[in-house]
Image (tube, rainbow, N blue to C red; front, side):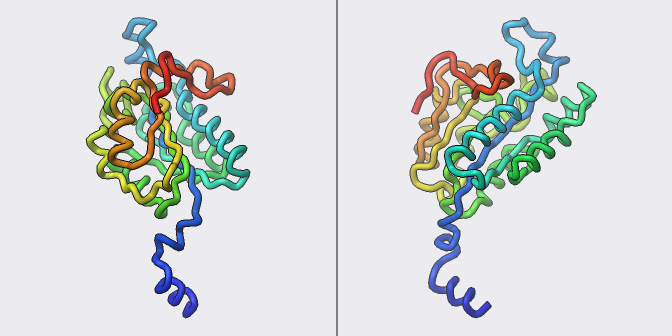
Length: 227
C-alpha cells in the first residue's frame, strides 16, 4: 500500500493508465418494423433487428486480429431500442446481446440516452481509447442511437455534433482510429469531431449499406469514406 501511495505521488493517475488500450464500440438500436412497413420499400430500415449488433461483433473480431486476442473491448449499446424491438418480435434480444458480450469477453455498457453514452466514453482511462467505432442510424449532424423505434422517422436519443464538446479529448490517444458507419456523418460531423476531439473521424459521404453484415462484411458506403 505504501508503495502504491508513493507511486501515485510520483506519477499522476493519468500516467499510470497510459498503458491501458481500449477499443470502444457505440451501437445504436433498430427501428420497429411496424413503422418501417409504412414507408416505401426502398426507404425502409432494419428489416433484420441485428444489423448494428452483427456489425459490432465483426469489428470486434477484426480488432482482436489486429491488436491481439486479449484486446480490451468496450461495447456501449442503446438498450431501449432492443427492448422495444424484442417485444415486437417476441425474441430476447437484450439477452442475446449479453450472451455475445460474454462470448467475446467484452465490457458491455447499456445506455438509454446520448448523455449516458457520452458519460460512458468519458469514464474511460486517460489516453486509453485506441479505436472508436459507431454502428447505427445517423445524419450528417448526429449519431442517432434511436431512430423510428418509438416514433416513426424520429430519433429520441442522439449525440449531436454540438454535443461533441462534452466528450473528453483526454480519453483518446493521439492518432486514435475513429470511424462512423452511419449515413452521412462525413458530410459535417467528421469536421466537428476533428475540431472538438482532436482526432479524425472517418465518416460516410452518402448512405451506408448494412446488407452484407450477415455474410461477414462490414458496412459499405454508397459514396465515399471521408477522412
